[in-house]
Length: 60
Image (cartoon, rainbow, N blue to C red; front, side, top):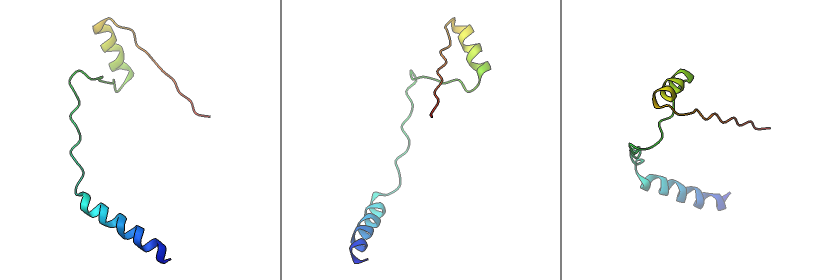
């Protein structure tokens, strides 16, 4: 049991000294804006005259 005390204290001290998490980085203006619905994706594709790429992934 004693051999676990030192690592736990070191971890607690590290977490305490780390401080609050940094603010999330701002997303660049030229990054991808993902559609949140199918209708939004269709509308965007029609406005820009571009195809829609749909990718499916299944575990198992």
